[in-house]
Amino acid sequence: MHGDKQKLSRREKHKRRQKIIFAVMAAVLAVGLLGSSVAWMLGDTGAQIASSPAGQTAAQPTLADLQRQVQAHPHDAAAAARLAAAYADAGRLNEAATAYEKAVALAPHDGDLLVNLALDYFLLGQYDRAAARLTEEIRLHPDDARAYFYYGQVLGYGKKDYRGAVRQLEKFIRLAKTGDDVNK
Image (cartoon, rainbow, N blue to C red; front, side, top):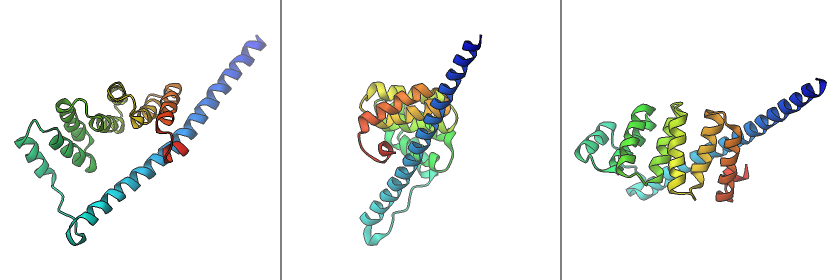
């Protein structure tokens, strides 16, 4: 009886240690991802300013403009994707997910669309849908490191499948090899 209690205690300690390791690794990776995303957005803005005449940015289309474009070109995946991104930027994630679903239906092999849709689902707390879209992207593009990274996040943070999350993050590291998210 005493031995069973000791085994259970070891098992609990092992699980607890695993959770702590995953939480630390996930937090470090999340900070790295956030930092690289901010750098990417700032870098993209700088490129737009540098490429515009006299350093001025062109007016961004409004949501209404983008909605009209999608209505005028209902089979244009890029138009649906632009509308989805604008909805996401405005914090309208349900509408963003709907627009990304339309874009994915029009361009089912576009990895960027699948990953963006999965991220919206993740932020909406729809972890099964996020996982399904990421596994679809991994099936279509098995070398897409970011799909493994985000799938690990969905499994760990969303579905609390820490072992599965660690496996996906290990695949991400193997594929990415270098970069801020790998180094952390």
